Length: 333
Length: 279
Image (tube, chains in turn brown, cyan):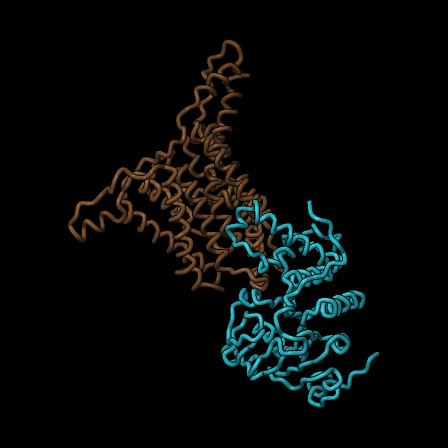
């Protein structure tokens, strides 16, 4: 194979891996949108908050240390060496479930039957609240995320692909980050679990029922409030996974909340109501970005990776506004 | 995987609750409901006896559907009380009403359109599932065993309503008449003590109406389920029901057996127009 062709493969592979990361974020959006019709602006911040909490538990930080120090003149920062990673993940998950419960109790419960735009505004408020809360609880410094995931280039893959190049060409093998591969595997597992859960369990059936028709769901005895807590917990879980992955990639920092913006083009492509859509949309955006950067970028001076996704989304809005897999909305008049 | 379905097995209801047939199952007293300045229901009282088919009739806008919505908790009346199976209450949440054994269908079908007939009926049994949600999330072991038990009960309802052929079809794709039948099935799946039917025959052709009437009578007679229904087809109402309550402008203007109601001058003036003649 010629090096040029191998480069194409490498770019595509890296695009797929990046796409998986986008899918992870988009997935959280889709889950909440399907079940409650709410576009949850806070999904990105939830990922940040989950990651901060995880690192905080792991490293033994005292929550609200700055606040306590400022008020009482103490000098608290760490309470100890922290808890093992696995336990920290469980504790962070517990915090996300508690958050889901509080969101239902303090926000959603009071906004039943309101317009979607009102609920959307509420989630914007929630996003700012969570961002400030994360800052106050755990501090604003950039923290490394170390949960024992492999990272760095795979030498094995480099060796294997070096052999593929045609004889005599100068090719040194493909680079692929093991962290990206791990993220892809975890995302596949996550989606499989979610699919099985929603298709084959009674709770999953109740979730689908609520997504389909609120009134009918109420009449058969489903408590909407319970379902909302469950949905937001699941979204919190997905946020935690996304937070771990993104945190391991680029450190836990406040710009993490902006990855939510990257999920928007993914959602427009895949459709707001489709879990497979979120996955495929993420992959298309990932691959499209990388290929565009590599092959169109040089012609226009580069750095098109940052806006290419939005261009793609715009094109989709013109020709297929419901996305690839979304439900076509037909308004009867 | 499943045990064979025996066609002779009974559909279950929550009928054995200590209330004897003919006693009060549901009593509404002095119910008033307004939306802002609009009075939808004014001071309505009536009862539903256990084991009967009770019809609620009246012109459009008389407050019939509002009354059903009050009974199953969608609307909360400003005044009045509802006594169901001996428990007196003012207001109630819909899922609590469902848990106490009130199931209903809707005037404009409210099914889970993206789900199969089977899944719709299984969802109807949610109040009968004893394991909590976390168990169901686990999917294995006891939760799965329970799932199979419920599946058997649902298959009996599917047999009963003769909808075997659409078991796996997403209900959104079904024709209207079948959707109505699936909706009845979902309500029956809850094994209700009181079944509320909001215009079960609306928009149906004669044959579909006959089928639906037969199902309603069978549910009532074979399984002893108490039924309260709203219907505009007077032929159907007079044939099916044991007693009829007539509403007009949110007020009760008649209450009694089909014959009494048919000859009630107020009812004739407000709704029937001329004395009903069977064709």
